[in-house]
Image (cartoon, rainbow, N blue to C red; front, side, top):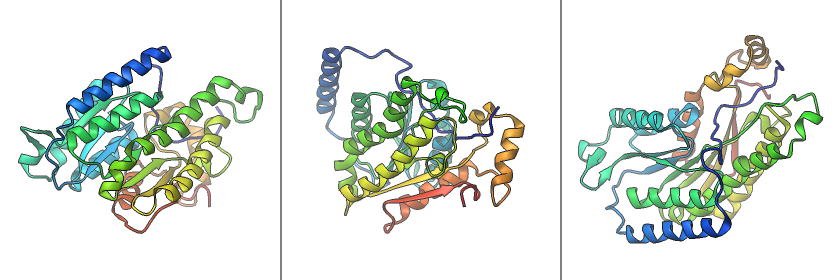
Amino acid sequence: MSSTWSDTTRTVGGEEEQQQPPHQQQQHQQQEEAAAAAAAVVLPSSRSPVALITAGSAGVGAATARLLARRGYRVVINFSRNTERARKVVGELQQLSRLPAHEIQNEHGNAFLAIRADLGRRDEIGRLVRETVVQMGRLDVLFSNGGWTKFRDMTSIDDNTIEEDWDMSFNINVKSHLWLMQAAKKHLDESEGVFITTASAAGMTPSGSSLAYSVTKAAQIHLVKNLAVMAAPRIRVNSVSPGLLLTEWSDRFSEQAKDAWRQKTKLKRFPTVEDVAEQVLTFAKSRSMTGVNIPIDAGFIN
């Protein structure tokens, strides 16, 4: 196997259910909006801040959810397929939370929720944000953690010119973050909140699981810089770029490939999902950082 690498936050949009015809999608969206309006007796807002984490049931997303729960946040995790795994993470968050018991669960709802939504569909992204705000009453942090890749031979241009790969990579690695920011902007404006994305060290130097992945992650980093301008002065927009993380996803690499990556780092170690989560928390807390991309790669790039 090649010694190329990539990060571990993946949610594959569009695989669970087939796309509907345009007129059905429009009808579905109208129904969702009507339902949201009917439910828009928004639940009483707690003073506790709310974080929405996409692709939040595993890897970086789950690690960040756990950290934020321990730090007093109410958390909504998004997932695409594995209901049982998402339910398990929600249970963990309830146990980890330091919020008063009456805030964790009461007659108005729960402080921790899982919402299924396909990040490959713009209408689903809008519904995800609407449901979060209706259930929680506010939105302070949006950690846009979804991503997609398919392994290709990084030494072959022919293996990296599969149009479907490029379409999916742009849809999930670039457009989904833009649609999330658009859907959440008015709510983040109200809370003077923060929008954070998971990019990749592959977007900062030629590397990664495929050319489409590397290029779209670079585009994502530039998108964040532009959104920081558009969202100012009330919303901060930043990104974090992990290196190779030893999660289930990294099992696709041989031990030889993993060791080759580690040897290229200055610290001779792998970053962890907890390292990435700590940087997300820093972005959430800081009032003076925007338009910033931080690599968490143990010195792989430098």
